[in-house]
Length: 336
Image (tube, rainbow, N blue to C red; front, side, top):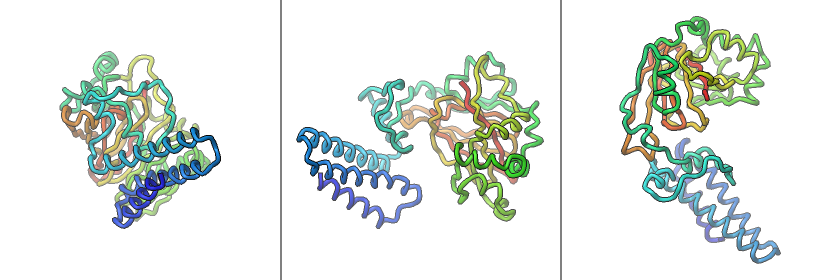
């Protein structure tokens, strides 16, 4: 076990000398954790306990170290590899989604070991369907739970959000009208800074005019009740959602300027979602699940003001790019 720890330390030191990028650095904490596991294993071995317990401890630490190093190497050199890919080739069985996990790993490891997707959900999908008049019946039958992406043009005609929502409106809402809301968001909500230097929503809303006119893109979930009440005075859930379904109580807001957006990624929210383009224009890039890489097509679709995109973000890898000079503001939620 000592040799494993030494090898891991050498690997970690060598990676440091290679000066990896910020994206590659996100994987390094896993290696740090492996060193801790190896150290714990050595401590376990030296503890005067029953020999059987010591052996089990060593075996567990060794297996964790080997599997994590293997996963690190596979994802580093084979970007399209996932455990779901192995299932797709006929080896092993998918994990029972109702069974609890013994260990909860970081997001990268969660993506690697996610359950495989049935490629039939994307095999015959070559473009994002576009509709201008979507009924509840049509949506429920063809899109609601099929993972087939859809854009509904002009779906916000009855919303006042298109006229009201702006950077200044959101800044006034959070900073002036409900100043305590920023503390609620910081403590209980999620904030995505993407490629910016902003640490939280307060940094975004208090940026200088010069910084505002540069490229930036952020997202956050609003879990402040007072703010949510005002936001929902200006929008309602899409009218085509299935009868009896309910949207999440969380509002997801994404905002930014031209030339930026979210990198290609996949979510783990457990439900399909919709996102309304309040202002600006955004291009969505969709890629199939990695295990369906050779069976399904990648796609792009442009979403304009007053459009709604419906997407199963747990199935489709997705990224966005903002076009034009107008700031992009979107709001969305999951539905059951």
